[in-house]
Length: 213
Ligand code: B1M
View (cartoon, rainbow, N blue to C red):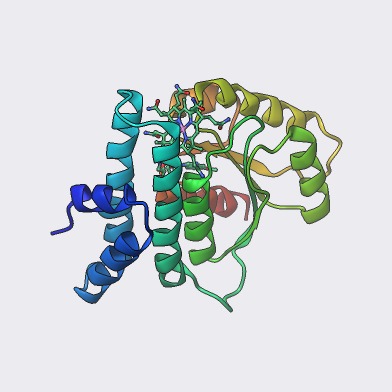
């Protein structure tokens, strides 16, 4: 049985070796990669989040945990990838302006690639002009926005409005997600879809493309 507390301990370590060891051990024991991700890494990170909120941890501790988490995710990445398959559609992903959180967005990127989407990941702290330029250049069917702060959630609304008002002939569907984002908020800001997690993001993007076909 995978215990989030074990992953929490390894995420808090100053070295990356413990988290790498834990992920590799779980794989060797036959745990599915999705369980290691959801129960282990995300479970451990949610304990970090609670302690950060309670001020039992500080930004440097969380930065360390984020570095360790990324390392753990990298080990799992190939297990979610499906190289060489026909593209299901193109998606541009990015964390909106003012926001540098990217662990969740990176998971969405991994799951999208693993499900056959061609992913163009713009990164973090992306201003709306950059989203618009990338849409014009790459002509994606879907734009995915991530935000982790209550303050930056509102930036998503600005991006959606700018996409809708733009003179682009083929406008992408816009899906949104991130810890503070809800289905109701997504509807309120005019998004086409909301994903509570990375798997849900893939499901909604796939559904939207099916409805267009
Ligand atoms: Co920040 N941080 N942080 N942080 N941080 C939160 C978000 C916070 C909730 C912590 C807390 O107080 N409990 C809080 C926000 C409070 C609020 O807005 N109400 C907070 C704060 C306050 C801050 C700073 C302001 C702290 C400071 O400087 N004083 C600062 C802001 C910097 C900035 O962005 N301008 C800051 C900084 C940081 C670090 C840099 C230290 C680090 C980020 C490192 C990195 O990402 N590279 C960090 C971290 C790690 C966190 C917590 C602890 C963990 C976030 C995380 O990675 N979770 C977080 C606490 C929490 O969320 N409980 C917190 C794991 C990840 C897998 O989940 O990102 O939710 P998540 O992604 C999920 C879903 O949300 C969804 O799928 C993912 C997989 O299931 N999803 C999508 C995400 N994007 C999606 C897009 C989709 C669909 C689904 O469609 C496109």
